Length: 409
Length: 228
Image 1: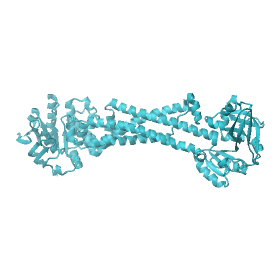
Image 2 (image 1 turned 180 degrees about the vertical axis):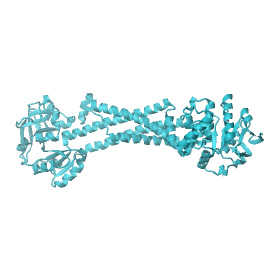
Image 3 (image 1 turned 90 degrees about the vertical axis):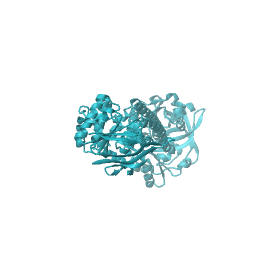
Image 4 (image 1 turned 90 degrees about the horizontal axis):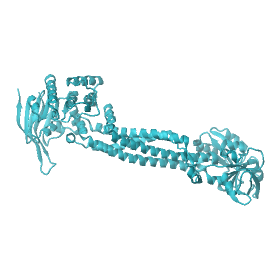
């Protein structure tokens, strides 16, 4: 086996130019495939993280019927007790409660439908990062104790012709079914990477909204949790559901099926990408190895004549093919790691198409990323491609008749 | 002691419209320690006969018996194993493995036979010295002359202690000096180690050195002369 490995490895370098071309093709194919996969993956992961950080958290608890039509009366009761229990649950990093209703936001000459979210500024900051999306020139996230403050997005401000310190009137249905409303002063303008979401969400303080809504104390529409590991959300939601009958506990994948769909979609896309690239490379390798067999007909005949078994001939050609694929594969992976690490740090700036990207919820500055296990997967796939690509040339070699092969030129 | 019996073998090729009778009823016996040359004009059936003795081709009729093995009764895999253990081959075009050094080329067959490493190295170095290339063990074939390559091929053929060596036109690509050196080495191995050599050749110098000259024509033995 050692001698076969030696022959296979050295044989790659017999025709340096030809092997280099194949190695370059494999390396550049992998670089293209891995980098574009990392780019798509980075965009998707950013979208997922932003959704967690600004929109939904990791796990949410609601009244079982709340999600049907966001009825203001469908509240969770005993929220203090629940929050206390949730906060001490293993795996839960932080917890906040929110009032959440739909209503109209109006300025002097414009109005639009919005989701009004009543937050506790302190605990909200422990779960959501929206406060970080208000730059210093655009106000703050409820830093003063003044009453009736509102934080809206820059996109909504633009639509309503509002700015900092503008007055916005919110109208909505209260706990008793009466239409009510209140005027709020804009204290902060935020901007996430999801423009449509920005236009739909305004934030006020929990206490201000509670008094207008007339929601009893110790009741809220939702409790949101941030976990130590977002991948545990599904399991933890099931556990919390059993501990909290009379509520509905959901992980992020249930709250936003689009996110889990996107994760699966990315896996499929990447699989498809790599299959196409490796398939194309496989055919290139088959072609090269067929040439190798053709060129070495006499040598193969000699090896058969002096007593090398067909099995050993097959293994030798397979090893040579695998080595060729692996050299290209490893170079391609190293280049990919370097490129992905570089752009993962600096990001890829697509600000020229920022508007379009943000219109569908993606950041204009994307950071390619690929999990470590993907590289191991790709290495295995390259080896498998090498093995598959060697079969046909090896079978061709086995069909040679030693006496005729030795006489060939 | 006879080691090869060729019993009335024929070989007919049907690749063309008219069947070609390359070997046409040959009976021969080779004793251990022979230094025999098979000669004759091109197309007389020398190479076909050599291939059948070496188990590379099967006769259309008749059989070749080496020791007690009837080659035509062996399966493809058994034939490969038989060649590995019993026959040393030397080819006209040297046919060394170009990516291996002289030492690795000689060791190759022993590696296929799973020899002990120390024993293998000792034998390899001994063989390379005996063919006058003890100082070229790490040279690749392309760094050696034709004569040197053919001497390595002889060392490789001898490596696993075969029963006999088949050399197909071994001097065809060599100049006179290299031919002389090669023949001297093979004669010495024949004389000292009692190694059996069977050549096919056109080369008068080989014929002159051979102790037995078998002449073929039209696939038949027309003379079989044993020299004193």
